[in-house]
Image (cartoon, rainbow, N blue to C red; front, side, top):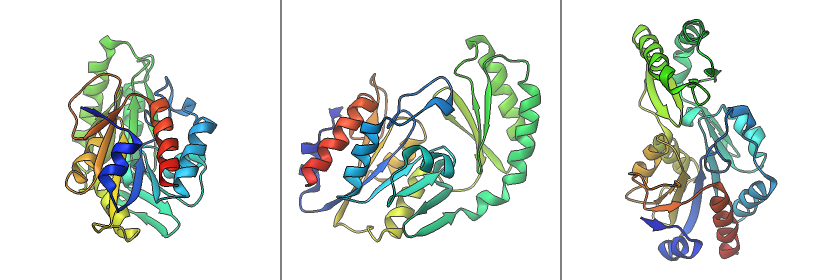
Length: 256
């Protein structure tokens, strides 16, 4: 797997412009024990801001839209929350209509899972507008199968939902044809960048980011953030959020 460098990306772009899409947790910030502790460092924020002055930038996160907008705090860019179900930016807002219909199912599943996992230490439920995250990073390994079984039962009781996997998290989302990849393609259309004059670049670290890598495989570039080699649809890698920050800052300077 090739290590990403600003030079290699600019070489691929040639005379085309760039559009950069960024995950948040594990990409702009390190993975932490509790999701509320993932604070964006000021140098990383400045790198995003500097890049956004030179090309279109969007942050595509599993977090709620309001949460990720507040944490990044850069104006003039697009934000896609809840894995792309909830999007806002300079050209307006978009919420997937099928996601809103699943809200009662998400609420009911959240109440059930709160009861079923109440006695399991280290499990944290995070209710978002269009999804429900069940974090088990602080749980014992022996308890993880019990947690997953509870999630699977909730999914079966609520067929409007689907289960997705992430780093030490199970997630229930509306079972509609939408993911980070489709959200990125929608953003390219919205930004009037869906042509061969722009090279889209997506940087992410988790399973849900693979949807974006696959969506851009024929017309853009994926960069997987990974400390150890693993199978990915991305063409390039970066090691960790520190390397992502350096990459973004150097890319901004290169575009200058």
